[in-house]
Image 1 (tube, helix red, strand yellow):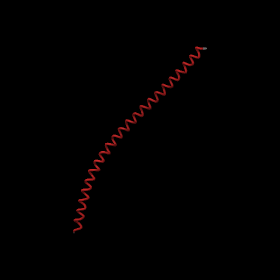
Image 2: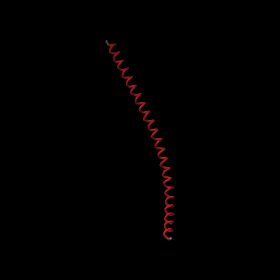
Image 3: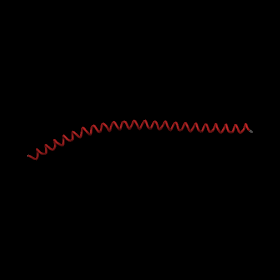
Image 4: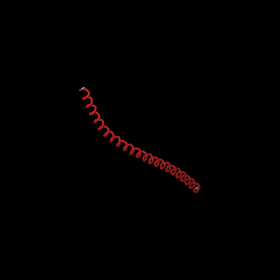
Length: 83
């Protein structure tokens, strides 16, 4: 009888160990997937930041050019009004 109870307990422990190992494996897969997603998001974020920096530079350049064109247009309109 004692041996039978011992074997039942061992079987339960083996089953529980297998279940815990399965759960650990699933958790490790989930962690790996989340790390992959984080890496992708960081890559996307870096690309967006680079594009944003470039757009800010273009905005500055075009802003200066637009100011020049505005002044030139104003001068031409003033000249037209004199005729």
